[in-house]
Image (cartoon, rainbow, N blue to C red):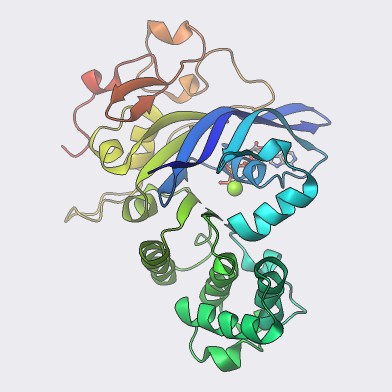
Length: 331
Ligand SMILES: Nc1ncnc2c1ncn2[C@@H]1O[C@H](COP(=O)(O)OP(=O)(O)OP(=O)(O)O)[C@@H](O)[C@H]1O
Ligand SMILES: [Mg+2]
């Protein structure tokens, strides 16, 4: 599959009163056409800032993209004018946020919110846009879409609102959907329904997805590949199966241990990773995970570890050969 989005050495900082927060510090990854990439990592590691950078929506001030390149469909997003970028956001890349209430307009009907972009970006007239909006609501599983299209956001439940958001995101048939923890606020059953819906839509429409989450469990069911972020860096990247079979960064091992294994009869208890993430204003010139790492060795003094290839399409930023030291995770 051809590469759809190529992010190269992205650096985004927040210039705050107490200093430069290096929220994204040299992040590189690709998303192929139709591929689903999971981005995981604990709170504050730079997932949202990465997504907002791609959309060029990092709040400024305090945020600023200080370096790197983001090539979408052969166009360098950082070189586009604001107007060109608005068109990319309306048509090519759509984003779904955790809380639909912050991105849905409470005083406009759902109809207005879907048809507006269809008229603006797809050149439809009002009648065509209404038909398409009803079709979209049906596609995301909103019952009685003909009636519901005239409702306001608060008239929908949390799960239904998230479906409406997905309908809006899909309206102009984007090539890429970036979902920033869209199911975190929902209960587990609804969460599973939304994940199923996205899986189904992907199969049907071939849209590429970047799915941001704390939860490696969701990634397993949805994504082809996963990148694990820690303190503004990618510390591991691999196809999903490979990551589960051979997790190779101590932080990934910690994340995997902290999710309950649904395939095991006795559900394991959640095991949080000890310690706290580092201060992004004052990052050490060595591995940022060092202070929390159970595998630390002499090599860990040697500067920030670069990503190195350890398996098929599998990269790890760690000086230590963790696999040689750890019994298999599933044992
Ligand atoms: N507007 C801002 N001003 C100052 N610092 C910010 C701002 N937005 C983000 N940050 C900082 O940038 C870092 C990365 O934040 P980001 O929101 O990308 O984390 P995240 O991985 O999405 O976390 P979460 O899982 O909690 O959503 C954090 O240290 C955060 O405190
Ligand atoms: Mg976030």
